[in-house]
Image (tube, rainbow, N blue to C red):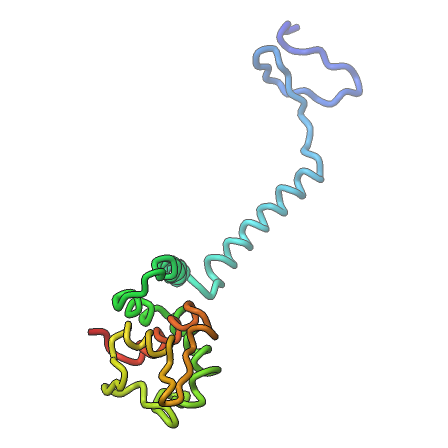
Length: 178
């Protein structure tokens, strides 16, 4: 009889032949609940991999571009306390500002300047001629303060600085930056 081999009682589960550091191991099958959990996690992992890698409509490049665009928008918005010409041109090239400005323009300015910015009651905003100055700072001043003798109200007090700068960004997006 081998002294390292544990004695097995009748009716006990079988013990494996090997013993390590005096520890014997039962030779049992894994419980069914444990095996089902293992198999379910394998199926979930394969399914998750297929959905995220093969059937996904967006890839890493598009998600990265969207996140970089969001970060750039936040940086411009944070630095927009001083709205100089360079900042307004940056805003006019950012789709987030342009889309917000388009919405505000459609609801407040399109009745006079037309939805396509081609003029009507108010002047044309897509041509090269600017009655009250064509630099971004001058356009911002015109929209903020208005031109009361010609019938344009000052939108600054009604809309606020953020919405006015978005409208200016939308107008400038129709022009080439210098």
